[in-house]
Image 1 (cartoon, rainbow, N blue to C red):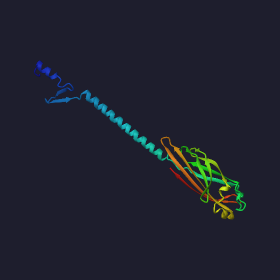
Image 2: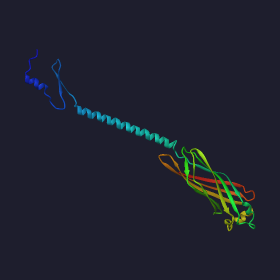
Image 3: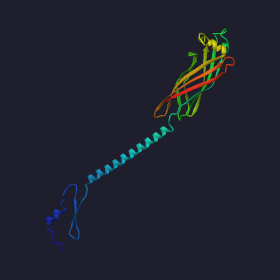
Length: 236
C-alpha cells in the first residue's frame, strides 16, 4: 500500500500551474512520470481560422486562374476578331454615249455609276460601320463622290448595299488624256472607299478599318466594265 498523503500535498497536485494550460501526471508501473500539456482553446481557434483562410485563399486563387484560362481560350477562338471582307459584285455605267468623241462632247450630260458592294462579317458578333465615301477617280482627279450609308453586318452574315454615283461630264473636260482615251474607246477609272467600324465583343470593342481600291476599264460603246482589279486592306 502507498503511504497516505498529507492534505497539503493533495492541494499542491490539483493546483493549476498556469491559467491557459494544465498538466496531467501519469505514473506507470516502473515509477516514471509522464507529463502532457494541452493547447489552450484560444490557440486552437486561431489555428482553425488560419486553416480556413488558407483554404479560402486557395479556392479564390484556383477560381481566378480557371476564369482567366477560360477567358483566354474564348478570346483566342470564339471572340477572336476576324477580318471582314469586301468586294464589288457588279458595277454599271449609264450615259457614256455622250463620250463617243471629243468633237461632240456634251458637258451637260450626267453619267450614272451603280455599284453593288458586299461586306462579309465572319465574326461571332455584329460589325457596325459608320457612313463613308466612295470616290471615283480618273487620271488622278476626283470626278465624283458618293455617300456610303452606315450599316451593320450581322454575325457570320453578308451585308449587301447599292451605291449610286453621278458624274458630271463637265468635270472630264480639261483632262489632258481624255481625247486619247475617247479615240481608243476606253476610259480607265478607279473607285476607292474607306469604311470604319467596330466589332463589339462585350468586354471590349475592336476598331476595324476596311480600305478598297478598284481599277477598271470601261468600254464606251458597250458601257461594260472589263479588267477590274481590286486591292483590299483591313486594319484591326
